[in-house]
Figure 1 (cartoon, rainbow, N blue to C red):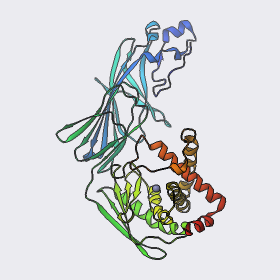
Figure 2 (cartoon, helix red, strand yellow):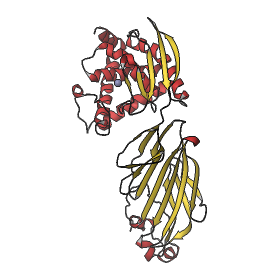
Figure 3 (cartoon, rainbow, N blue to C red):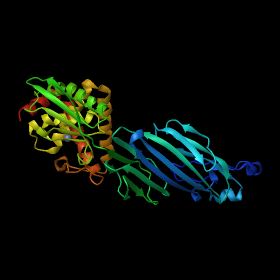
Length: 403
Ligand SMILES: [Zn+2]
């Protein structure tokens, strides 16, 4: 009687109580419950509230017991196991009448058990609500829509004046007074997290410092939105500590005449990429990126000087130099990044048989070209890294200097 159940987030969501039946039948396995016949409707609302620096999430669940086994065996459902995101605050669970008990059942995967205030017999429904907050920054709300099932309606409300990008586009947008609402109707599959990036661009704050490099002093200017000081300071110190190492690993002094401006940006500004090195105009860096992407963009000052004939060499060496800088300044990050890139390369290899000479970096990075471009980057790194392992850094420096 054991049937294999569809492997969804809802696996073993409900405890089926078969007290009477077990007395009679003895060994009836609980997994015989026909979970698939049940219906869960979810009405989820994500509301960006800048004054509280949170995204307030409210999910109304309506569970309908259509499990025919509970009819025949007179069982009922009395709780729900459900995954909530990590790091959330102010969780509340309640039905129309009262608060409900809930507890974390699984630390690793962040599953919670919500205990119903009544038993849900065959053909009956139960409605309850789960609320929580996702902490945001003063002018940035970057968060995931974390849902499942396909009876799920999702709305996202964001005040006017924000630059918004949402990973999927099957929404209807409406505006009411000073709030924009993005509505995803029922019927969509939510197995994957959906990233929402909402930025309220303010006047730029500026911090700067000067670094003494081999042949010149270079000014570093970092520009960021109000409330993003932590990001700004991290980028300034990452630039200061990385530039001398880039001179060492490439064997070339900082090769351009100009100072370096690093500007915090939205994914609209970066056209979907993590960042871009615009030469004299400076580097723009997505606000969700950390110093690893900054080092990659800084490394392009050197790779461009080498005038490589192919894009893959430009990107491959930028990532090799990023790795070598990290190896000195953040060895754990270096090892993790290398391992991840090799692993992603191996995983994608069967699907993308891309000749590196064919690699191009499209103007905009989006869901249609993401995997192929990503594969090209990873393959470029693997090749340049292997060359570095086999031939050594000096030989790379010599061949790059010859250009
Ligand atoms: Zn690059």
